[in-house]
Image 1 (tube, rainbow, N blue to C red):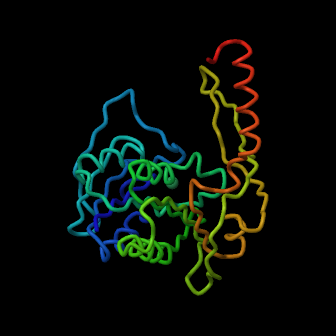
Image 2: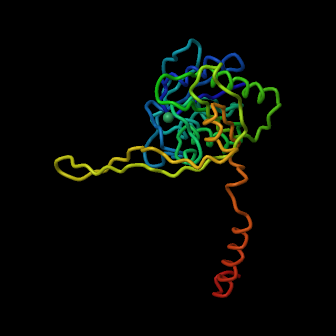
Length: 262
Ligand code: MN
């Protein structure tokens, strides 16, 4: 089994190498990751400047390792095409330093990388630990290994995108695992206005977030010291078919009335 490991925290982040250490027991691991931190770049793909892919020194022996001057999604694209030559069976992105819950999945570079793998028809897992310091990566890495084995054995479907979050706890304090849906968060980011002596500039500072902690959501699981596994993108609550069908009908009628649609 050939496994691509990537992240958005940069190629020498501890979380990535904690993953590699476990995953190399279930397959051949190739690391292709951004050369610097890219948290928050989401699914961004670089289209307006050249991309570079360079072989670099691994932190664990005998692991093919490449750094990319680009985004996490760029890293996956270059990895699949060049570093792994279309022979990847699984993409694992992480272990991210910080949770990626609810709305975060739309801006997360960790999830963005996994999503790119999914676009290419490869099973993909994004995995994050809910903390900003003093990380417990061991359970996350172990879980990634179990999921990778499930994919290797054919126990999990090939069309798979999982967003996994763990409470930052030692294994004896973790209360269990929940299969969840995306939670909801109200952003309370603070936008600071500053002056550099010549011009005004702005700085987006993550503030305290307000969560709607509905049972069955990812944030709900973490609040109970449980691991959350959210299958994406088929979150049943993310589409409102009834409304959208009505809207499609209405718009079609308007277009017909105006002879814009034949
Ligand atoms: Mn990150």
